[in-house]
Image 1 (cartoon, rainbow, N blue to C red):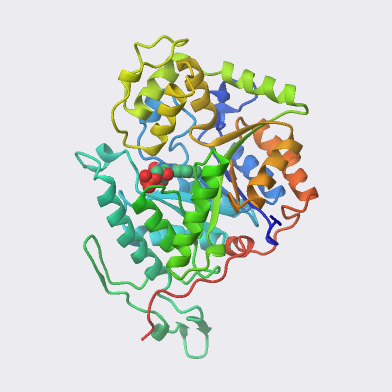
Image 2: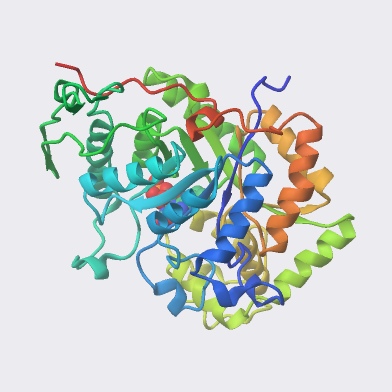
Length: 440
Ligand SMILES: Cc1cc2nc3c(=O)[nH]c(=O)nc-3n(C[C@H](O)[C@H](O)[C@H](O)COP(=O)(O)O)c2cc1C
């Protein structure tokens, strides 16, 4: 199939500890600086020089992972504060941050993301998550079940988008003669009254330069897809298998079209961890070297916690016995784990390494040229609209992505060499959204 005329879109999952678990143990990782600005700024500037669409910060609101010695994926960077700092020091790259709808109020969130949007000149994005952990920090005895979380999320996002649309685009007139800075007739109450929220509106901030900040979503369950297909501009997916990714892509676009939205305006970006070398052998050596960093004892604890099963009695070089697996898992990722353990017969050690490498996302071990071929193949065969690339170690993995992999894509005409616009929406090639509020 011919490639589509639009270019690939590439964001990067910004984990300054490195995406590969325990890669921070490598010399030169700058792990001493995790949580502070300078290092993450340097990584972001590298990504901007490579013309990536956006940097993306995930978030969880609990220290549980750190308590299990998993430093990679955590809340060391609070998204709104780090994005605000990056906004001031970058000029084109998109700034996407995760905020949970389970532990916050929509009026606060609408302001925070709009704040990042204004501080960056229209480059903000919000990754909506409903969170599967963290209730103990918010006075909740248990996590609400996923269906309830998504019900709240649907209403939450509805309120946020209404608030973002509550000013007409031309509301700020700055009329010195009349003394009217904003025409109040162009500000609209939203008068939302729902199951979870009562919000009068309007927002107390001027409208976004990009029409509305970008909405990102990564839900893969039924309610997750319902939320994403209704509101999101970008969908993150954990899809390591091409055929399954194609199926997911086709299905998702169909659901989007069924809602009367243009499927080309919802960009599906699976995760990819590129482990690169100047030869295949060198890349494999790097993969092996990264695997050697993994603390197996911590790996057992982390894998047990991820899948809700006790692996502590299993020898590292044995297979996981079938009877240890529960009948059903809470997370779809765990089913892949079951398949790898029982059907593909990986040992516990191999399972730990695989988890450390990809955490459910696809990885590629090879030259930059071969990695570019792989990405183009997925793109052309409609398995994706681009990728959320996860640098396996820092800063080297980010350098490899930006100075080896991206140039390969650029040479083949699959990635921009200059930003097309000033806002994230322009660079993603998305139209201004239709306002959600009926004007009075
Ligand atoms: C690339 C990517 C990033 C994600 N980032 C976060 C995150 O930062 N915080 C979080 O709580 N969940 C995160 N998730 C989990 C998703 O929000 C979602 O819960 C998961 O994909 C399962 O879908 P479901 O909730 O519809 O079952 C992420 C998922 C993906 C694929």
